[in-house]
Each structure stands twice: as C-alpha cells, then as structure tokens.
Image (tube, rainbow, N blue to C red; front, side, top):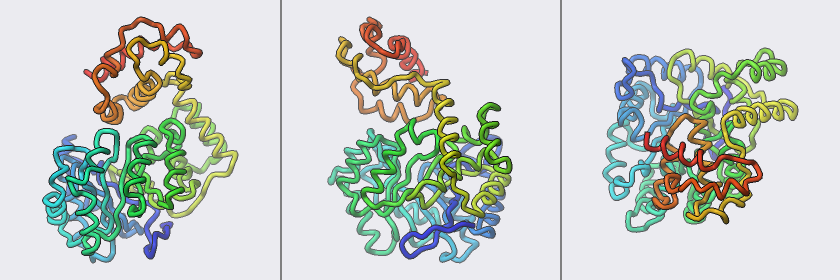
Length: 377
C-alpha cells in the first residue's frame, strides 16, 4: 500500500468509502454486514487505514455498520471520518445532538477526521450563519480531542468553495471534492484544486470513478488507453490520474464488493503517475465523452442580453449538461434550490431570441424545456 504524509500521520493513499457498501436484495438501507466485515478485514490486512462514512449514507445505517466492523481492531490502527449532515437544512440547529449520536453509532470516543458535509449553493448561508453555532461547536470538540482533524467536503461551485474558505479556511485542514479526469474540466475541478493549493489545504478525493462511469469505457476510448499501458486496467487509469495531481493525499473509493476491493488495492500497491503523453490522451478521452452528450456552450453570454426573462442561460446549460451526463443525480437540483422560480429552466418562454445570437447554434429553448421536464420527472 502506498502511504501519504498528512501532518504527523501516514495515511493509506486509498481510503474505503462507506456510501456504496454491499446490500441485501438491492435495498440500500439493508447493508450486508457480513460482506462488509469481510471487506474491512481484507482492507485492514492490506494496509488501508482510512474509513469514510456519513450520517445519511445507506439511510443512516452506514455509520453503525462501519463502526461495528472496525470495533474488532485496536482504535489506534485505523482513522475514522464522518460528517455533519448540512445537506439537510433541518439539521443546522442540531449539531450537538447529531455529533453525540454519531459517536454512539460508530462506537468511538473521537473521530480522527470530521467534515462539514457537502458545502454547496443550498447550504452555504446556513453554514456561515453564526446563530447555528456549527463552526464554534466543532472547533470546541476539536479542542477537547473529540475531533482530531477538521475539514469539509464540497459539491458546490468554485465561488461557493471560495466563500467558505474566506470564512473558515484558516481552520480547515483538508477538503474533499469530486475529482476525476472527466471532471477536471467538466466540473472545473482543476480550478478547485488550485484554490485549495492557494490555501495550503490538501485534497481528499471522492468519486474517483465518477460513480462507476470511468470503470469501463467505450471500445474506441479503451483502445487508446490500452495502446499506452497494455497492462493497466481501465479503472486503474482513473487512479493513476489522481496519483499525478500534486496535493492529492487521500483517494476514497466506495467499493461495493470484494472484487472491487481487491482490484483497487492492487492498483495502490505502487505509484505510477501518468507522463505528459498519457495525460494528454486521457484528457482527450474525457473530452470526447463529454462532447458526446453535453451541449457546446462556451459561456460567451450573448444569449443573456437577448433573454426577455433575464435567465442565466450559460449557468443553466452547465447544470443541464451535468444532469444529462450523470443521468440525473443531485447536483443540479441542489444548485437550483436557491434559484428563484422565475429564473429556473421552466421560466423559459421559448421565444428563441437567445438562439438567434448563439455562436454554437445551440437549441437553447429545447434544452430548457427538456431540463424542466427532467427536473419534474
């Protein structure tokens, strides 16, 4: 196992994420405890020492099951991370009761790593609102040693991350973002990595395989990569990409079965970063994947000045592309929660004034109608 330095710790470069644990009969709330325990045993035996769970994973059962699986090992032999569930605004005034319950569920006296969960457009104001006392409470727990290291995860935009960092950045020790070779440009992950570098904050990675989309590729793209590294599996390319990005300390993978665990651990037995030619080829593959689905908006904003409803068309198209590529998901709906109804995709009246000035000749009105329908569906 490759290890990375974090302050005075040696963290396994691969961490076990507990959002996609094996389940029984396809029921996400019913975790297969025996299979999970076997995976944790194999992980511990092969050098993984970082385990990441959260309040809401598996309908609230992930923390309990991971806690039980890890209880068989000396507390100092693993690092446990969980998060304050600020993705649900109804939790904002419950930080103390939730934190105490999390310790109980996980069966521990302290958390090695604790995060503000999912800093985004929908919750940034609440996270920064002093009346909830979330930051103050978590800092107090850190002083008491019940939180060893405090950080945050973010699915929000660059600007949202910057707001959070401007407020709390000096106290954040790490940040977990969605980072993979597809989102390097598609979700502006490169700029987010640069932002964290400016604040001297190491990067924790979630969605390295983008929910499994990068675990297999179309034959044309797979052939390009196989031509460069015949011995490397397709999923391994996603991990090799991350091994090539300075600042990446922890790569979390939500492994759902024993085979995935074995394969991923095998990859992380060595560092094999990409050279310039390999990196260029991989990013070209990502570009082809995105262009196959995403609309080619360049955010020139010509359309905005011609929209009688004053819609932020480039911003909406960016969310539309994400929603289409992912096949749904929570990122677009989450971002739109703070957008007034009169500025959402459904507010488009189909006048096509925007299309008359679009250099890319995008059928914007059709995209807005489809986006509105997808959000309702």
